[in-house]
Length: 235
Image 1 (cartoon, rainbow, N blue to C red):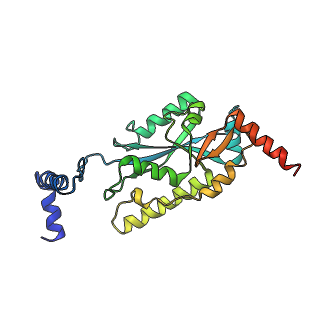
Image 2 (tube, rainbow, N blue to C red):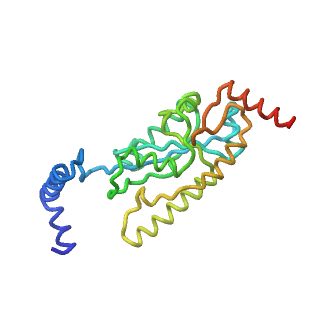
């Protein structure tokens, strides 16, 4: 059976369902894989990113510092619902939350289908995309900022976002010409070192980097650091 004949057969009647059931049955018996190894989904899983567009007018010093340095907070999440604009999708729900709870406008920067050949879990793919977009924001810090779903935020730069969206559009064009689908496997990592450099320029003593996360430092940690700086002046 050639490729065309197989595709025609696969999408005829219950052939796809029966084949998938048989494959999953073999994967369970032979390889002891838990859960369905192959799935046929009406709404494929996507990883999306929504960026907060602060305008420098907020009185909070943290937001002022982000604006001054060109840093951006991006929520990266998972959805298996409709992603078409104007359908009340997950991204639009998050945008409304940000507007109502924080007063900021926001916008989606990407929505990528999870690669259908990956053996990683959806959670693992989600974390991988976060690590490629920016530096993760600690949950407690995110809570303090009153960000919705505080475990899903990263800090990146406007420069990185522009570079990322340009690369995505270019890759999509390449995939279109090759008759393939642009998915999460095509996402390339940003230059995280340049973001770290900007983070270190934040002039707020309670903001720090620890274990590859943006954290809120305790008073004790700030005092210790200031003490060390003072000691250096006498060495």
